[in-house]
Image 1 (cartoon, one colour):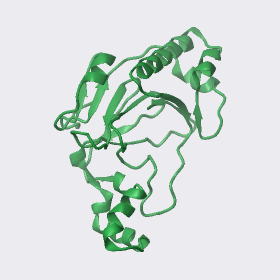
Image 2 (cartoon, rainbow, N blue to C red):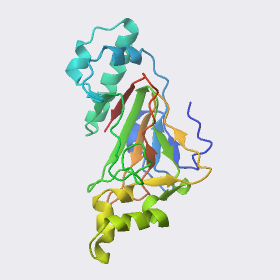
Image 3 (tube, one colour):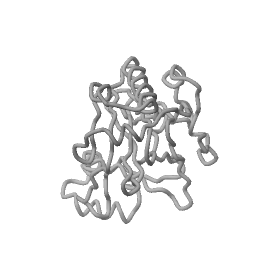
Image 4 (cartoon, one colour):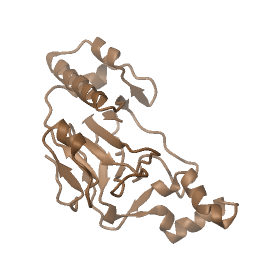
Amino acid sequence: MIDLSHAENQIHCVTNFEDLVATPFNGTINAICWPRKLTGDFSEIVEKVELSGNITEIEQEELLALQLSEQGQLAREILLNDMKLLKAHGALPMLNVIQYYDRDSSYPFFPTDVYSFHVDRSPVPTDTFLCTYYGESSEILPNSQGIKKVLIPEIRDELRKLYHGAEEGFESFLSEHFFDLHYQAKPGARPTSAGQGHLWRLAVDHPESQVPPCLHRAPKEKPGEHRLLMIC
């Protein structure tokens, strides 16, 4: 199961998909989880998919065409059912085999890739859904244990050196380059591992949100081990 000892009342658990999508975020709760112990061999699917680059999206037709053992077929049925549930909810799930994400080296003092704790932003109301079926899983950080990087004085000073416009446009510059989406974990911070098989719904920064967006990041992959991740 999930270790929620450091979640600080940020995470609410449910027992089915209907409650996962219907339970409102409220107060400090900005992550809702449907904990599951899944059957089947998801590693077989990872091994049999033909990779194309560091991130390979598996289309439903390709997933159906894989020749799998009985355990692999069980895993496939779970993936297909999760896709079906999410699509019926109006989401657009993507199933990816991830070798690694591209690193951002544009600003060495401030990488804006997904290995950094960050929040998702949308101009319209939406949520982020994710589930790791195989490999290292995402991490979730209580908002009280992170600080927005653009508020850290030394980082803010470096960002000002990149900006050459009028003072009143500085905040827009930070937003346009996604700097304001990234957070630094405070000393002693204790992230929660999203674990394998659990389906998560995370709060997003959007105009109608009633709660702070959820801080999360992608894990560093183990050498030679790929991740199987559904996200939307």
